[in-house]
Image (cartoon, rainbow, N blue to C red):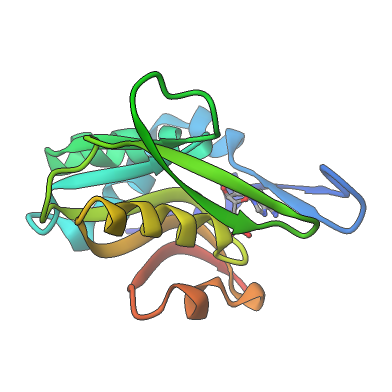
Length: 172
Ligand code: AMP
């Protein structure tokens, strides 16, 4: 039987600013069986179908690393600017006010690798789109995007199309 993972997500109203309901995943991370089940369920549709997982800083590292281990593949990491020590590619994305960018090492993904993007939460999809751009820049093939949480009303799924989105908890 599947656990209702929503029981382990804490809503924090008005964080980090007024009007945002922050989905706090730390209670889920603190619960061993629930965390394990979440990792297995995130990985399940992609078993045997990917060559690497892409984890996006920073909660995408927490969720992506165990998914990579569960799938028996390596982890490529995407970081905020200036954090990666070697040669990088970068991709910009829109924020509510202005833009931000993300970076990846130029050798993080082999040519033709089948890549699964993992992050904790899909909101507008801007962050994930930038991650997918970086995969394509390295001639990787995006096979899907997996999230613990999807804020359906923000339509991130549409923005990522035709990439298939797998989420465990959806708020509409
Ligand atoms: P977006 O680029 O709009 O899809 O935003 C997704 C990124 O922002 C993810 O890395 C999330 O960790 C973070 N994020 C956006 N909205 C929330 C929220 N309501 N609660 C927690 N994290 C959020």
